Structures are given as C-alpha cells and as structure tokens.
Length: 89
Image 1 (cartoon, rainbow, N blue to C red):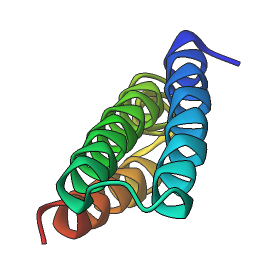
Image 2 (tube, rainbow, N blue to C red):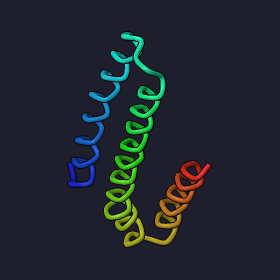
Image 3 (cartoon, rainbow, N blue to C red):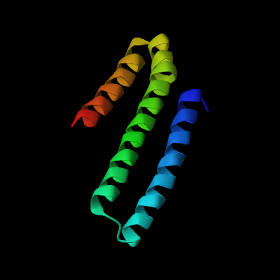
C-alpha cells in the first residue's frame, strides 16, 4: 500500500470513530446543531481521504499509464476528469 492510501486509511478510521460518536449523539438526543457540526467534520475528512486516494492514483496508476502508451494514459486522465466532475457537483 502506498503512502497516499495509508494516509487515506488513517483518515477513514478516524471517520469511522466520528460516525460512531455521531450515532451515539443521536441516540442520546443531543442538540441538533452539535450533531450537524460533527457530520460536517466527518464529511470534510472523507473529502480529504478522497484527495489522498486520488493523489496516489495520479502519482502511480496515471503516471504509469501515460508512460505505457497514449490510449491508456488518455483513459486514466478521463477517469480523473469524471471523478473531478462528480466532486464539484
């Protein structure tokens, strides 16, 4: 596992803990704004983990595909463009 994926995995483990905490807050009928704040925090960390995964993908898979040939490189670039399109919607 490359270091980008390792960073993402650590963030995702943190998010897992945050989600457990959020569920507990809901079960305890805590203040809605506090719950929402924690949800937004988890979302932000998920986005950062996604950036780590995409960064690793660009530095390994995409780079290798470009070096191997034009068609494979273009396919990988199009995959990234599709992800970015989903990300900004």
